[in-house]
Length: 116
Figure 1 (spheres, rainbow, N blue to C red):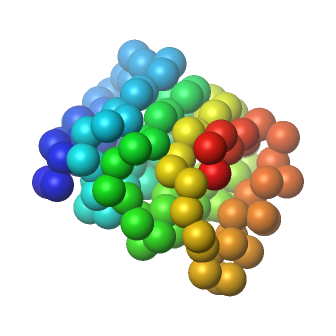
Figure 2 (cartoon, rainbow, N blue to C red):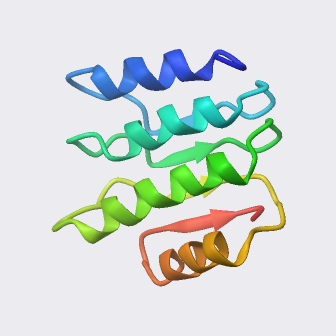
């Protein structure tokens, strides 16, 4: 993995119980592969982390798109997104397609983006 966060995300996704309320992996050189692992964690069968900080990493629009797709899937499912509250992400310019995904997700009251 680029920054080593992918292993952590994979282990949390496979854990029978997710004991975390907050996960701060900022400044860990996480990249798009790590973001894909995070996306898997977000759509795991049970609510897990309420606050995730992935700012100040090497995640590009590709990684952000993977996370946004996972969040869309999560919030589109019945009862989805009950445990997810805030995601702190890097500020970046987004293509129109990814920006549309982002704006769609902004309508969910239980989801808050910071530093985006």
